[in-house]
Structures are given as C-alpha cells and as structure tokens.
Length: 228
Length: 228
Image (cartoon, rainbow over all chains, first blue to last red; front, side):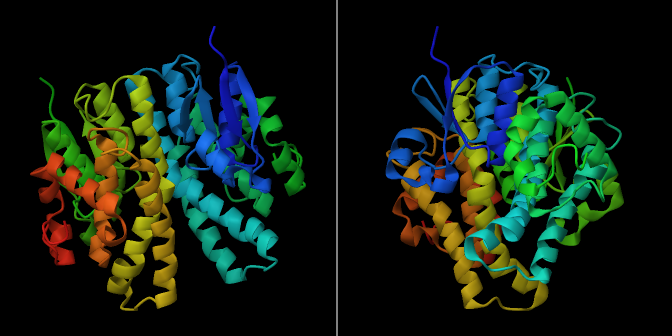
C-alpha cells in the first residue's frame, strides 16, 4: 500500500477548507500538514523549494509528486479514484457542468468575495487603517453582482448549483461565500435562495463543514446556527 | 454525422483567441458564430436566453448542449476526442500539470494582465480620462509579479510551461500576455525567457496564431515580427 497523500493546508484559506471537506466526505486518508499562513510559514525559501514552488496552500505531495491549485488537485485525485462520482461526476457531460462552475468562480465569485473580505477585514487588521465607506461600497457592489448570478442563474430552479444533488461545485462556492461572514457580511439577507442552499450544503457536508469553518464562526462571532 | 460545434467568440477576447487557435490546430470543424462584443451583442436578453446565460464569450453549443468557460469547454471537447493528446494530455498525471497551469492563471496572470490592459487602454478609450502614473505603476507591479513567476518558475529549465512541448497551457498563457501589447507593454524587454518562449509558441501555432492576433497586432501598431 502506498503512503497517504500529504495535504498541506490552512483552514484560514477558502480552497483549503473546500478540499478538507471534500477529502473527509470522500473518506480519503491524508497526512495532515498544516501550514500557518499567519506566521508566514509559506514564505520561506525552504517551503518554495520543498513544498510548493508557488508558495501557497492548498497543495499536495503524492508519493513525491507535487501538485498545487485546488481544482487541479481535485481532478487528479478523482482520476485516481479517490473522490466518489456523486461529488465529481465521471461522465464527461455531467463533469463539464461542474467544471463550468469551477472555472467560472475564479474571476467572479471567488475574486470579488475575497476582495471584499480583504478590504473590510484583513487590510484594516494589517494596516490599522479603516477603509472609506465609498471603497467598501464599490467592493460590495462587485461582490453582489456575482452573488446575483449565483442566486438568479446558478440556483435557478435547482437545489444545488449544478443539479439536484451536492457536488464539489457547491462546496467550493460555499467556502468562498462563508468567508464574507468574517467581514460581517450576511449574504442571507438579500439572497433567499443562497440562504436555503447554504443550509443544504452545510447539512450535506456535516460534521466536516462545521469543523472546517470553526475559525470562521469564531471570528465572525456567529455560531453556525446564528444566521442559518 | 452530427452537426459541428457552434463556437461563439470574438477575437478581441483572450480566451476566445486561445480556443480558436486550439480548434484550428486540432483540425476540429466548427460553425463560426462571431459575437461583436464592441456592439454589446452579448448583452441582450435574447443572447442570455438563447446563447449563454452568463452573457460572455467564448461559449459553445454542441447539438443543443450549451457550455461556457474556456477551460471547461476544452476539457469537454478533449473527452469527446476532438483535441489531440499532445495538446491536452489524457494520462492523468500529465494532465494534472497542464490543469495546474490552467487553474493558476485565472487569479494571477490572467487577472493582472487584463487589469493592466483595462487601466491603460480600455478605460481611457471608454471614459476619455487618462490614468495617473501612480495607478499605472500599481497595476504594472501586480502584473510583473506574475510575469516573474512565468519567467522564473513556469519556464525554469523548460522550453514550454509544462514540459518540452507545446500544450494548451502555453496557448492560453500567450493569449493573455499578447493582450498587453495593446496597452503598449513590451514583455520582451524584461523577460528573456518569455520572449524566447513566445516565439516558440507562435511558431508552433502558426498560421493560426497570427490570424487570431491580427487585431492585436493592428491596434498595437506592431507586426508579429516587430517585437519578436
């Protein structure tokens, strides 16, 4: 038997949380390699040379093979038979619908949720400076333009983003959206479909969803129940 | 025999150019469905309903099946046997290295090249206002941080991004980088490896590379030879 995958991650990172939930749901054993981003553990020359040349998480080592980028990792492990078909379809037409979301998210949902989080929560923490209301408003507008697409297009007439059951697309999306709680944004107010969908995603992924989001719940001062 | 794929694209869009080159190199017949972004043809309700619910290009219709997102389209057509293996590997380990690039690009190379292009070329054209030197400098810095990664990490010891021969990763990357010419940025000055690699990509993809970039060459006032 080969050694388990070494999984390098930090639950502070959205795609790290997504893969963590996916691995647990898949009953895939992995060697726990936590990287403390807050201590800059990913910024050393050693990390670059030995762990990940891009100096980011998540990444994996599979018996010496080093791979970065959460979506690439997911596909690689799916090809190895480690991810069940209901989470990431093998039939290429169904797979393409999940891929469509995984590719769409980067420059839309992920980018704008992350920028909002950074502007409202992270930068003030790092610099001590409060952003102007106008700046927050701009970033909120960009983010809500994409939340609108999730509410009106992706969730149109469906319980989950790509159909009637949970796939990895839902897990990646939920982890990006939950991040905005830390910046005190409550997506559930304006978006009833997202609200109900997030509930379904959490139920389908628990207990791992709550484990992955423990820090998010703590920082945002909201238990998982508080806003659901 | 089934009808050819309907390909909706505009050669003004970087991923549209990438897929155009890939389809031509693959000898894949397609029905030419040009969408004039400059005339807002993608913004109509009809386009949203009939062509692409996200109102963007590129996208395809395959015998009624509608799919968006260039990377998802590529993977779907590869699964259908339309893309040769040397351009997008079938063996999952080799494929994962190409996927790693395709996923990496979105929030790094693609985002920052596009933002530079938008700031320096597109916004002044649309608004009549010239950006400040400080703003241009900020966006140039973000872009060059990622060009550094292409030069020093992706092209380290290799002729192409993921190995010794051309794959779709190189084509997607080159189309993003060529776009910056229109904003009068010459990537070849600071980056000798990118300069030599772009030459190789163009040679491997011609005559389709030049066809796809005709408009870019024209706007930038540089023939393909001028800077290579």
